[in-house]
Amino acid sequence: QEEVVQEEVVQEEVVQEEVAQEEVAQEEVAQEEVAQEEVVQEEVVQEEVLQEDLLTCEGKYLTFSLENQEYGIDILKIKEIIGMMDISVLPQMPHFMKGVINLRDKVIPIMDLRTRFGIIEVDYTERTCIIILEILIDNYAKNIGVIVDSVCEVLPIDNSELEKTPSFGHDIDTNYILAMAKKQDSVKTLLNIDEIVH
Image (cartoon, rainbow, N blue to C red; front, side, top):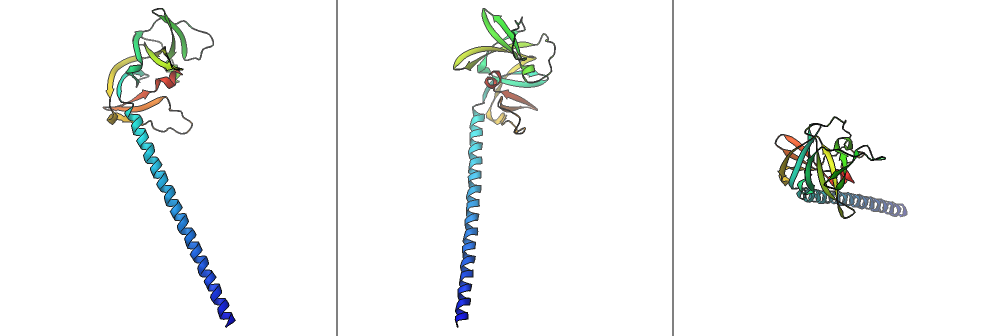
């Protein structure tokens, strides 16, 4: 009889252990489901933030070309467009900073976007021009000129034509791109010009 009691105790312990294991398994499943739900919610929030960011990219953009690719800058950043003029070279400047110009008694630094983007330099042509920008640096409005191959047109771009910047891998910085704009059969890169000139 004592052996029967001991066997029943062992069976009871086995049952309790199985119940405990089942509870642990159910708890792990529940935790995994919660984690998956949190991931889904985070992705939804990120997508909503992205859509809000894209909405802020709506507006008019001045488009220009570099090596047969078109880019756009928010028209509100544009002060004026001028033809090429003499640039005074300054020492110890990064290779993409060409120097300064004297525009109506105002000294303005000049950046070559070709070399800034790592595109091979070419001789300037009659279509080459300088876009004078007004940007905020340390909360002060500053003017800077960027050299481009040619200016194309002013385009209105709405949210339906915008797409987020594609991922090119962790080692590639795309902070200088606001968004991609799909126009007819082409894609135009909208630039975060403040990020580029800083």
